Image 1 (cartoon, rainbow over the protein chains, first blue to last red):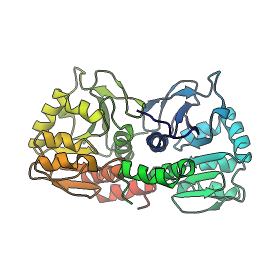
Image 2: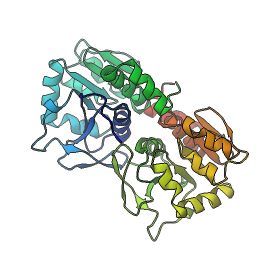
Image 3: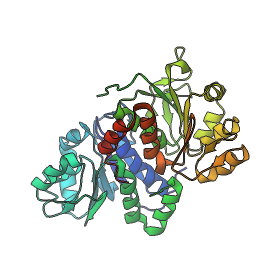
Image 4: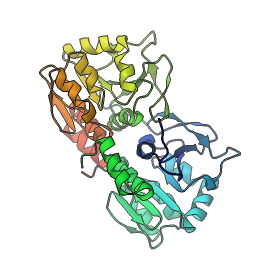
Length: 193
Length: 193
């Protein structure tokens, strides 16, 4: 049973060919912490199939008439291929991400997805990380690439891959709810690092 | 695209109210390693909804006429509540798990699910672990409870919770494919521990 611990709300964007666990592990940690999170399909179809052939039923679609970015406080872009290419090709999303990030609102991306932020020109002069295979794209677009599991520079939070998604979920929880909730979350998931 | 690296096959059992990421993170790691893994619904419905209200479409159902445990080499029980209670209440599954485990075949369980193995009498005299909230059940049924992220005792592999599921997936990969494939998998997921 979900009990909201905040009125802040997170949108996680699902494209065909995403890495479903990068999306779902972060959603899972937010859910456990009482942070409302919507799984938003960008495909027009509420059921989205991952790069690992896992079909997840989302909560809503970007094409829903009542969809509004104003409903959210943090946007999260999971990685995977071709999921990242599909997110990148969705103008409704990338236009909003650009305006959102430039307005100083919180955005998170993991694995290949930080390359979207780079290509949109949003990582110029910023510290960031990504899957090692995409770090050259970040560097080409003016980012200072770090090798930490999660890198926070102002409103931009980036992470490396599935192996760092628990740490990404903990970072987002800490950001929204603070240290005490994050320590409680670590206990809930039996965090042993 | 999936490329099989082995003819061994894993079944992961999905009950209503499971922790979807405990199931899916392990499936994800196996998939990436080329180990065929089926998501098997125990509900009669191919779409199963988790304790976090995430609906996942499984590959097949335990009630399918052509379902056979003989198709598999390793069975995996994810945790969550009431998912674990629902797995425990499924006689078709628990009867098979008992015969399977007693025959020395590989079985894995995480979080609350090792309590199923305990209650079936399968952990008597065995080393095992689980979510801390269920360790008393293991001890009451004769298990020696350890606090490692993953405990392997013969054919029985147990783990603690979502925070240890990457380690569980790595352990299963190592068991099925060996060290080299496991090191490659660590690189793929950007394992940083």
